[in-house]
Amino acid sequence: MASKPLFRFGTYNLLDLEIPKTAEHKQRYDRLVAGITATYRGRTGMLGVQELLGDTRQDARRLLRMLAEDTGMRCEATPAGREKPVPALASQALGASVHRYHVGLLWTEDVEPIAGTMRAYEGGTDFWHAMVSLDVCTDGVERSRWCSYHGNPFSPDRRLHEAYRVLGVFQDPKVPGGVAADWNALSAARRADGSYYDAEPYLDQHHRKVRYQAVFDLDRPNAPQLADRRSSEFLQRGPGGLMDPVAALDAPWEASCGYWVNGQGRSDDFGLRRIDVPKVTEDLVRTCGPAQRTVGRKQTSPPTTGWSPATWFWRNGAPRREAVHAPRAVVGHDRRPGRGLGPPPRAVAAARPTARARLPPAGREHRRPVRRHRGAGRRGRLALDRPGHPFPRRG
Image (cartoon, rainbow, N blue to C red; front, top):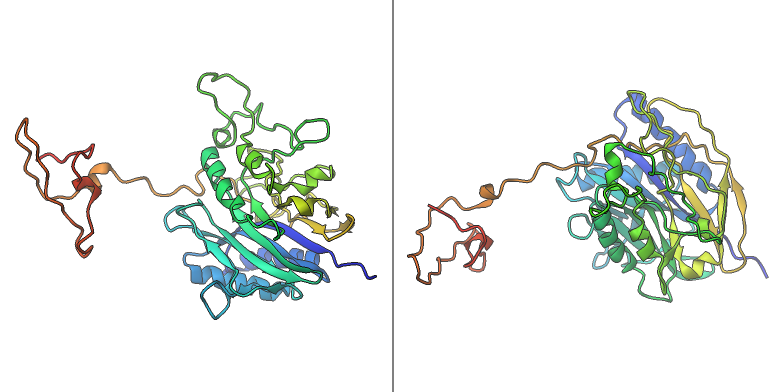
């Protein structure tokens, strides 16, 4: 009986990748294309990408289509309720960041997307960035589900809340799959001896950005700065959790970021970390084999050396390991302070109606008339006009 084909699944943060407009950007784009092409040449699988840049969704779709065409992969699938396929892409909400980030999925020609299963979880409600999911068919597997996701960089609490939504995609125990992600947090997977697979990196760090990654106890301000791993702890909890296959196999530890040097020659304040981890459902962990890589540490300009695609194989059968040579100098990641911060919130007073309201007589019940937004219709009631609002209008 012929062996069932292996399926490669990986995650790739593309570091502010946009449609190249200069010779320097085109050179970097070509390196990214070469790395992805080499990783998936002659193989079956999918790749989740993050940090596609585009002011509009149309710009991001053009970029994803171009990336798919240049790497010999596919990116278009049919969402539910639509007849025509569109790029498998989800977008960050407008105004959430200085740049608008998008996430996407790529797959090889022999992967068949199932019509009506592509879903874009746009940013703004459940996510700081976004997530996209797609069900596919491959040789030997009738249906599997794969996602690309980008975690919140600034709030450990929000990362935990987003983890609830991510795991909610995998409610059917009959559908295996995984999530390719820049989690912006360390994994909570442990080794056989009970220690974390990813050691504590923040104990001796004292820069401003560490506050977004470490656990801070107000009652113990001088406590050790331990990594906040709550989102990963929740994701891997069974039944039906998402597991870290590299840690489960106890493969040699390898960082996914921290190699980049910015334009001022400054390295990543966090140092070497592994926050880009493709995670899979429990049933797939037993069939996974890591894609070992031989990598280089050569620094290039512009900064493109901080991110490497993390990939592995799975199949219905015994694990199998294969060697893959993927140059690390194909992608990078920018952790400069302030990236991703949106505009400052407006003052409360700016949201209040400008019309004057008569104050109620002292000691008497009074209900102000309901005011509505122009064009909002009969039900367009303002929250600030509701009786008992904590910020009553004065004069």
